[in-house]
Figure 1 (cartoon, helix red, strand yellow):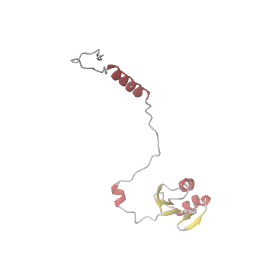
Figure 2 (figure 1 turned 90 degrees about the horizontal axis):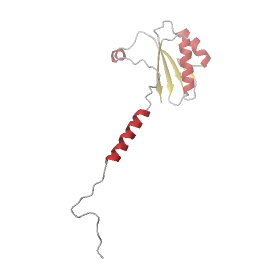
Figure 3 (figure 1 turned 135 degrees about the vertical axis):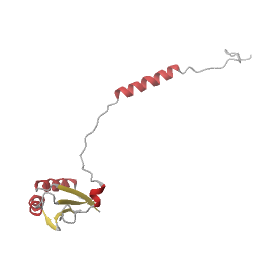
Figure 4 (figure 1 turned 180 degrees about the vertical axis):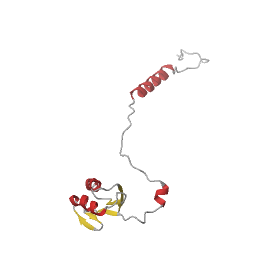
Length: 134
């Protein structure tokens, strides 16, 4: 017995896309409404201008604090403890505009770096900068 189709050969079948489009719009509205827009606050860093980098401060003497890979602190190539950093910086910094540079090894502890930074601030350093060394 031949098979009979419900549709005539002239009719084309269509898929109704309206319910799918409705679902997509509902999901889109849901995700837009539930998205949380939070601005995270971070550390404010004063970036130097290109003109400031181009003019070296040859008349000022730098105070150099170095943190080695073993977390030893060197003040102008002399080893000091973290408790002596503030007094050492205070003795070396006669002018508040004297630059203090902290050179930290890339594998040194972040906690030691923050301690040295705070101690240098307590010692009267206003112009603090840092760099990493391999």
